[in-house]
Image (cartoon, rainbow, N blue to C red; front, top):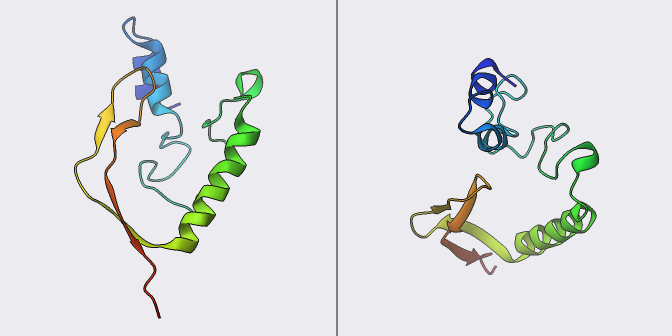
Length: 109
């Protein structure tokens, strides 16, 4: 955790939200942490929690996500934004209320 995050985490008004919002975006751990990078080493991320606080559904969620993405890659040639994304504001940072996308199939050849 970098010093800025530590200072904010210790403030009285928002311990949990600031820590969770910083998860997997620590510039001391990852270079350019806000950039989506499929080649980044995923070890150390906290997407499914850590230690005794790990998500019990992680063993189902990972193969489900892999199956979905593999099927999408076979069928879809291009994804692009089709409107303005809208954040879902609650205690789970970085979630979407709306993420409109346009899907184009692979070109027939």
